[in-house]
Amino acid sequence: MLNNDILKALTSYAESMTQSVSFVLQTGSHSKRAELVDFLAKICSVSDKLTFEERDMADTLRSPISFTLLADGQPTGVIFSGIPGGHEFNSLVLAMLHAGGRDMKIDASVAELVKGVEQDMHFEVFVSLSCHNCPDVVQALNQFALLNPRIRSEMIDGGLFQDEVQKRDLQGVPAVYLNGELFANGKVDTAMLVEKIMAVAPVKAAPKESLPMQDVTVIGGGPAGVAAAIYSARKGLKVTIVADRFGGQLKDTMGIENLISVKETTGPKLSGNLREHMEAYDINLREHLKVDSIEQGDLKRITLSSGEVIESRSVILATGARWRELGVPGEKENIGNGVAYCPHCDGPFFKGKDVAVIGGGNSGIEAALDLAGIVKSVTVLEFADTLRADQVLVDQAKRRDNITIITNAQTTEVTAANGMVDGLNYTDRASGEAKRVELAGVFVQIGLVPNSQFVKEVVDTTKHGEIVIDEKCHTSADGIYACGDVTTVPFKQIVIAMGEGAKASLSAFEYLLKTPVHEPAGQAEAA
Image (cartoon, rainbow, N blue to C red; front, side):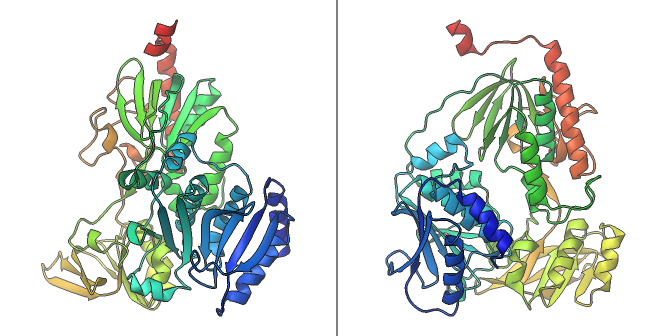
């Protein structure tokens, strides 16, 4: 698992550490313990700042394959139960480096909010090592633990703790528990975690300072938002980008083969490339924060979830979209207990079982193909009378013996027994006949909903929530532009979103050239 190339890279990373880190493993016996001991010992071999020890810490660690990190001998609150390989290896490396003194990439105002939590919080995060969403949650909560001694964060490999998984009836990851109670389930980003923590825990008031006036404030950190920010910065403008989740939906896309000039890549890799490109410019990034409101005027007042206010001469909305829900009985009630939206994350929980995919577009057929190699059978249900996916995908699906495709099917209910999904009911739209499929999991893949709810009183939107724009990305509000999947632009594609982001930036630049500069009220009075 840890080959020479990985160890060489770890050696280089560890050079940035300024304090010692100890990996402390709980004593006892377990079939995977020898493998974990070897794993941790090899990691510690790359630097004299890293040490490994075995100690009885039964009051803190749940199992002989649980270990915690100490920084200069002091508890960090970061715990791993299992062997953090796969996607979680990065979570371990980052925890090690951050505990060792390397700066964390977390917005300063978010860090202050986390430091202000005044109650004890023990987070347990059940993960699958094949889940690409789980590390985001683990890494965020690890950072919270390192920031606040009242917070503990424990990653639990569901594959090695099946008794716990069955006891809690888990069929989806990440599943986050706070002090023993379910706290969050499924895909959740740092901004959502902060919001949920603030809702349940007393937090010391954080400073609410206003940023200097900006020329352009971009809301959204996906392909459209990053393109808009880069194009604006290249014009010499003062630019801030506000992103609750940098990369947006892009991070959930595993295979990308239609970004022209890039033969193939993945969403996480492309997100990293976008960040690297953006960081080459003087762009102020406010990450893990949401926009609560926008006040229109010569200067737009943008209030963030941290309480900060940005005054900006123009705004570009690039907030993208999120998974659309079915809206039928049994869907929300069974999220994490058989209803899922991410086949990459939750597919392994249904190994050898029967599942359904709702939706016959590209995302639905791609999900069916992904799942077909794991589960016993996949039933695809499409509302229309024909599939909407690209023919190449349809052809692949039809060649699979364990994929069944049903068209003209309107899902009416997801059913469950003993707290777990056991089937779904649907109506044959051609005959009107009510039918049923017995299964253990339902993966919903029916498209996206625009993230526009926070601006519905500011700009015009369609009945579907898309922000109405013209050919130059103008919205109905003066000085506010929009681009990407949140808008009425047809064809929701990465390459189109990037082009729309560039177009919105150029339109905003034209607007700023023709609009006089109005100093913020506070600065004018000071003058």
